Length: 199
Image 1 (tube, one colour):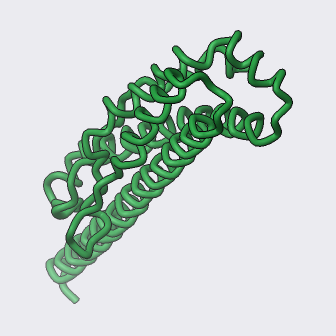
Image 2: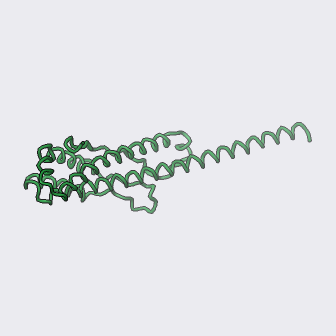
Image 3: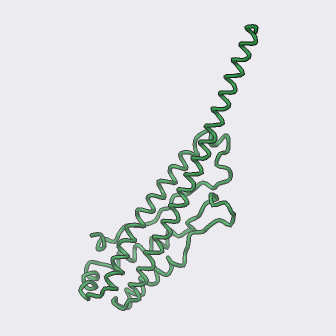
């Protein structure tokens, strides 16, 4: 075998190894991106579930008869708006096309604000003094779900940040590893736990 044949064989071997390495990296990056998109979708579903729990517990308290009519009406209106708004799912079969929060930010911020304004320490003390197990359970469920809403939103936003970081890499953009999947968006709304509920 001539030295030229050996050189050609070495170059060919190097090119084949390089192509295999590039193919492996692209496959790994695409699989990782799929997992990250699925993580965002799961986080959005968890956030949606916690928002529904918070609204349902608020409605239950509003309809319990333990509150004055004005407070009950404020809570019921805000909670009903929250229950009626849902996360929008894509019409396509591909779940990685993304869920969308559907402009719920203002509705959820309003419910947070109403909870903070109506469930003051005085109101909560009066409710707890009634020694009504159902009312106490509703208040505890509102507090627990409000805390979980905050954690779920942060978890979702962390997942979105990671997807955006990976999708900004040159290999992902050049080789279009994300396909047609929509770039996920952060969810921002007021999720502060009412001070009287934070114990």
